[in-house]
Length: 547
Image (cartoon, rainbow, N blue to C red; front, side, top):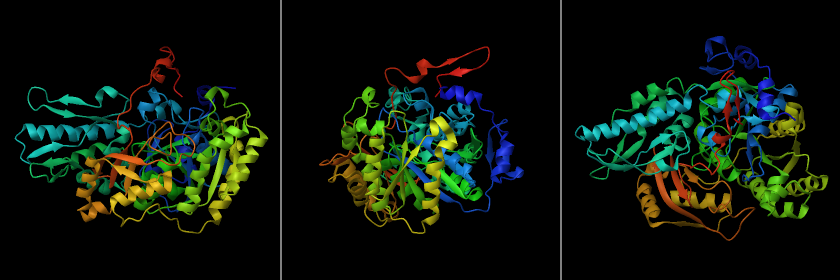
């Protein structure tokens, strides 16, 4: 079997103008970035239905959420459906860290793979630049006399790489020295603003609303007060247009924005999703990590702000991953073991129950199939998921592309077309912020409750005083590896509480961030970063190891 990169290299891509024409994008709305990439600057006239793809909590054995999303869309296209993808852009941090690329795998990939995984059309660079421009203007304002009487700066610098050395730094040494921090770009407020803005005007407003710190009287200081909003918008005016690429089978894909789901809201941009909906009858989109993170934030934050709702939710799982959650070492997950599967499967069941019981949405479980999966293991999952209101379908998209996704596509299309209900949310918007956090912890994670560190409790009490802030959704930063805030507690843990240690207002993004457990906003590299295994042929420019 060929590797992902070999499959991608062998693919014959269509000119992006053909992909745009297939989607119904007029030439006047197309801004080409070379032969196979473009930005799109206008909406169509459709109102397509949304299919959300999420997953179990990730394990080293793998899940393949993006791969299944792509294969599902290609499968729907093979059924003759007018379908588009709406996906996130990869961050360089994971690309050169542990995870590697994020463009799918096997015969279910988006392309050009190397471009998308690296600098793409420059969106991440623009977001990082806008973020750090604001930081520069803050420090310059203080240096030039500090007319706004800024005392405490809470806005951080950003970089789109994993670098633990930048978690805490000293800046302004010799003239205006203070402690500062770097966040990875995917976790920055600018990224959240970028992805949650409805248009350029909304983007400018949200950028201006960003609270950068407080003055000597404890009052908030905003980017607008620093006169930074216009310049930041200028840096982002081209980036805000969604990017159009294609799958290896020629299905249109809008790839735009890339917040992490464990430390941010984990969804691609509202503009990209709406653009895809305006050109297709069906839109397949994904939310990062497990459904406790990405799906919860997609449903409770993005859907509210965008005025959309999915008509079907796909939860991706692997038999291997569930057996790992049941206590089997990674190198043994390919061996038949129904007992271990039964121990690990409750993680999947919890996510299914959340989708069907909390959000009241149709749910399909997609088993990203491996050759080692046994009929007995599949039969067990079919039976147990059916009892929880979810049908199980096999997805063989890595090896067979859209053809391997047709069976899943048929079920998803049927459920999508049949659903005419209205989704519920995990919490009401008029609830206090502490109650919103409690409801997510109890209803979505299965926690017994939430413990707030004194500093977090005090900050929440302060935020509750403002009626507008009280009405914001919450974005909980938590480990992706567990339903709890302890990454070692696999499967479906019980008898645990969530600890909120810090709280941040993200006024521009329009949510309140609650940091739980040991989660950090700037990841570090592992012992053997993926970067060490990458090579480039300087004669041909061929890259290896980028997957």
